[in-house]
Image (tube, rainbow, N blue to C red; front, side):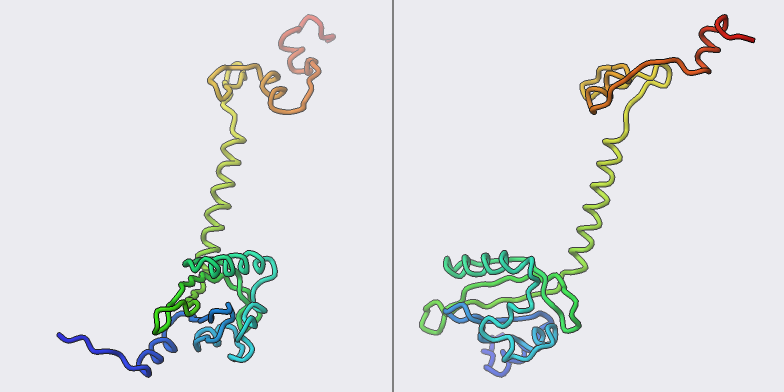
Length: 195
């Protein structure tokens, strides 16, 4: 089967209708193209996004990291991947996975970057949920003390059994003073109790 070469129009249809956001930057690092998916996501027109206009939608806390990765990769002409939050048309910031790759023009010279982006907000939130659950489980397990049900000594990380006072003193700033509660006086020293 002979492989047919796609026409320019066929390429444009693929790029415009692809289910991902696509951008292109020229050799000066300024963006000169965004596909319709990008524009639909941001709710802005192409003129607003061109040059560095797209960066207006990047969440302020992610901006410096995003710019650093973009510019340093551009300078080295290396592939980059990054995650950042981008403002959607409704004002909500969504997590974006952005992958940029350098491309060459028809003469084989560096032509800039082509990038693709997908909304990964659901994945980021799922990762955070798993991390929170994991941290909670670690905290809960750290809070468990192996204690003897008879003498109330506690086993430390090395397997040694310590009096509860020794263990707590070694693991906190607690100080102890000792006394005897009324129930123990009755049990241990019944002769001292006035009837």
